[in-house]
Length: 170
Image (cartoon, rainbow, N blue to C red; front, side, top):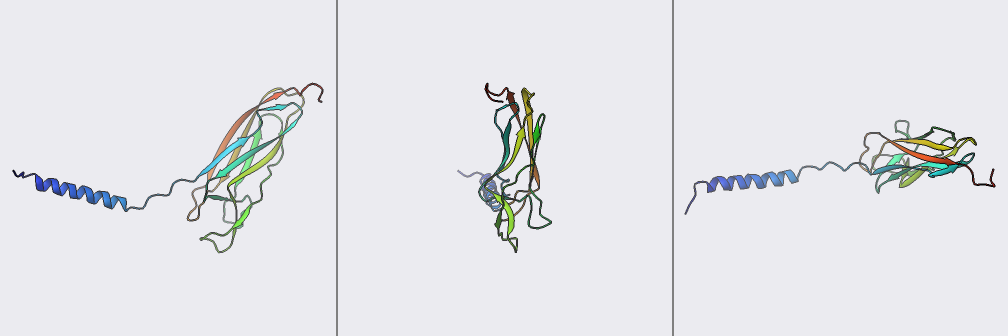
């Protein structure tokens, strides 16, 4: 029993297989940067006290961002800012960067890798009780060994409860 459609089915099968193999040979786009930002702060702080708050930047294996003081003027620095609805924040303290050489650069570059923290001190006035909102912003340009991605900005928020200091403390 022969079918006149058999040659056509064979051609369609061959075309389908060819498309599958040709499609598999196309370059695959690199996965996006593995960068996470979070705000580290106590959930509760006493009125009239100072607490350390921090922005944490966690970079996946093989990823880096430029230091806040890049080694070349054309490189985009990493910046971290914190703001509060009540109280005062100290200037952000940046961690020490590492010097690392990459394939695309003749000289070592000042970068952050792994997990880095940008710390500040939050001082709450004596008379404040209730909620305090914190906002953090980190701007960075994520890179790996082969390429740099577009600069990015991450915004994070937290709310702290301000309570009376424990009795006996002033």
